[in-house]
Length: 417
Image (tube, rainbow, N blue to C red):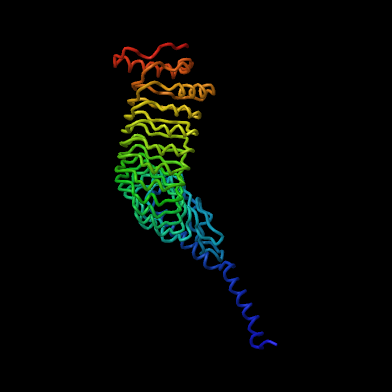
């Protein structure tokens, strides 16, 4: 027989455990109401700092209850029914979506310290100006931040690196300046990083290579300079890179050949030098490759013929030399090819003409530009027989280049239209 004390203690322990569980799962009424009131007051303070004509019309539901209300809960102010506000079951604000809401003002009075449960902010396509407060780091549960298409200026605060749950960061189309902070490499859960169309300068931080979850990188249209970090080859989940229209120098990192999930690579209108790395031929899922208007030299790697999913391939406006590799004839998905304004020589491979004929037969081919190079020999018959005004114009350009060089044996004009 057990001890009487133990037998008495067992049901008491069970009751205590049940009471503890109920404390956890049953919402405590006064706490959410009080929290909601504080959040509402903080949001109203930000509203009062905004331009009072257009902004307040969008936020007309952001109001206090009537003063003469007789309801016993009249003192409780919940923002959960306000325009653009989402709440959890406990009544705390978890989302703010004010995109395209004609909001004019700053984020100076935004209640960063009063919204501890906030996971989502979208205030894009408004007329916000001023800077991004370092207090953004107080939103520790934030997973989505969109401040794009505004007039925000100043630097990207390094404190943004403390938002370690962030998955989406959209800051494009503002007037942000300074460099991309090294701390941004702490955002290990980030999927999308969108910084294009700002005034960001300086070098790309090597810490970008730490963003192991990144799938989309948009940093075009910024006066960025320096080299592309080799560490970017660590971003093995990347599917798209847009880093055009800047002042980046140096070679394309051969480590880009490790980005096996990449479908789009756009690095044009920059000042890149060196040769195209043969490692790019490893990117078997690549559909669009744009490296035009750089200072790239050397020959076109034959390994690029492995990119059988490629639909648009633009290398024009470089200093590439040598022959067009026969292997480019393997690119049977191609609908846009630009190799003009280089120093390419030799004949046009017949395999390239067959590829063009195949795509043309599907009425998909849009661009085939080999003009302003130094090709020799005849135009492959398969190209000469294409009934295409686009091809006709390009052949004329080829002829003119040859005529300018006063070569004795221009392309054969044996075309049939």
